[in-house]
Image (tube, rainbow, N blue to C red; front, side, top):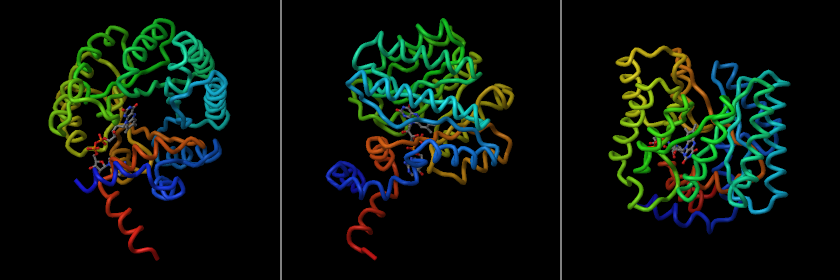
Length: 297
Ligand code: FDA
């Protein structure tokens, strides 16, 4: 309850205050910061996916500038021989400006990724973008095999979307979903979301899709491991995915136990919206913030 209240008033705090709490979730502001963090992860046998922070772009100039940054990430991964791919948000590449403009931008990125033997994951944003994101993915997946998509277990439509996409031999990331969606389209209760997560995951894995099991939820990780055993899957048929700064001990222990693990590594100057989302789901946030306001020093 208190957490929810604090979450709702987070936007009134100064950005510099939010930044203090958000630092652990982002690599830094430059590509060099991302390279440093990915190298550290790779040294522990953990893969990465780099994200250039940014979303909801409304001018073509901004979208093209983001496209340029994303291309630079792919080239840098190649130059430094990093074990990492790229994650992108379509609203950062112009989805809210024009579908075809965004399609062409992503196509350019996929062409470059293909020439560098790399892969691009399309993040899933709020429900106003779900149809366009899936349509754009479907269109490009016919031409490129190095593109993947994300589905969100909290959306009631997701099982049907998985059935629709499965025919492409897809590369999924399955997460719970972080945007604030209406109860008419989204499960709201923790147990319902988890139940749908496992239902969709079973469907994907049973149909031989490669899945990035993206969660820090102990119950979901334990249940996924059981499912994997039951379906006799090899280690290279799925991976676990986690966010930078969340439960590093858990991800390290999974990697040590021989599971494929990938960490989402965001960097860049547009860190604010991403950071707010991370802070809102941090169960210890209330304590940190109250302490820092009332017990300075
Ligand atoms: P849950 O929120 O129940 O958290 C489980 C436990 O993890 C918590 O009890 C806590 O201990 C810890 N934890 C979780 N978040 C924390 C935080 N911020 N700080 C500290 N501790 C925390 N969403 C989306 O809508 N579209 C997308 O494209 C993606 N992409 C994506 C990539 C990857 C690699 C991951 C791991 C997640 C996403 N997400 C996402 C976010 C996802 O939808 C979800 O919001 C978060 O993963 C949190 O959900 P959990 O499954 O971890 O469960």
